[in-house]
Image (cartoon, helix red, strand yellow):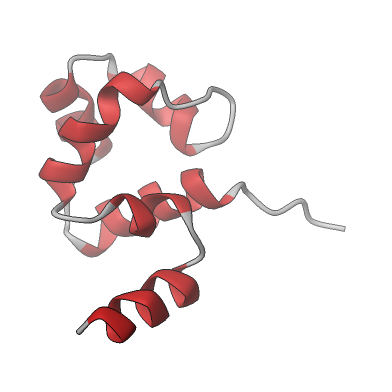
Length: 81
């Protein structure tokens, strides 16, 4: 049985990829090594909260889009609109 990635790591990867941004660019933009950021996306390290504002701004997303299942974030944003 294949183990699913935690939502945060999966969302970070998907949000980054859909914007055509490389891991190296995200890492440099928030002030960490590319290897460390790769480990975050792969679930080997936890994303320190101090990097959230920079990542959110870089990707142009809300915290909900990072922390919750995409279906939930999309539903909630539609309710607000």
